[in-house]
Image (tube, rainbow, N blue to C red; front, side, top):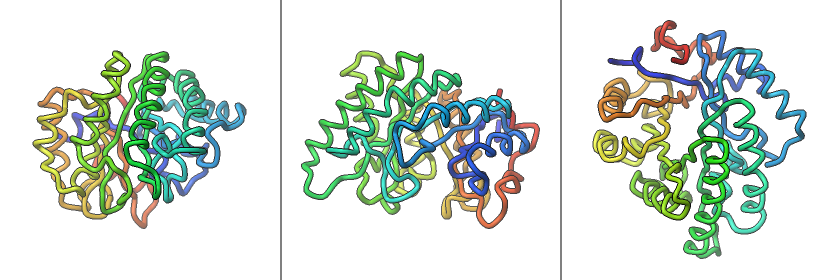
Length: 279
């Protein structure tokens, strides 16, 4: 048990960001990792030129890294936005334009998990209208994910850092996931269980794990306070990951933490080099 027993991947949208996007897969590989994940890399556009998609695929392939998670278009992230799919008007349209592009790219690199960030509440928009739009778009996304043999992830964020995001508890995200699965009949909508966000919300992490491990499709970690590497805060992350394993979760654990003032490659000293490659 413990960290060496887990299946880790590195989020290249928060780690190795001191490098251009296309150099990050090789940097992760040089640090010993062979599995990576990404937020949608083109924050300005849901439909980048095919040449840019091809260049990212080549960078992943050349580095020998497997993309195991990809966000759909989510607006300005990092930045003020927390997704686009529940935001009426242009942003919802952009999300829809992205669905097949993201799914096709994921299929081209063998990525089987697509994360759909819900989006913020918008001033002047009826929350019920936003939620109806969200369900419509999540159903489309779940079907696209199913077409390529992937799961759709729905994530809880935390209220202090994302005050306008409505899914700031595990039960809130689970409720949405259950609605999507009921609407599609596919059963491929799953929970993205982020231990950092849940801890920021003050949730009982062991209880969340017990209740929702069976509905969890991906896990992400960072320590709290600070969103740094394991060991920089006070979360018992090793113990919590063991609890997840004991509860039946056998999937990957995304490293979605900030490296602090040091180069990203120096932030992995908590994890033996022998435990970094994908298994």
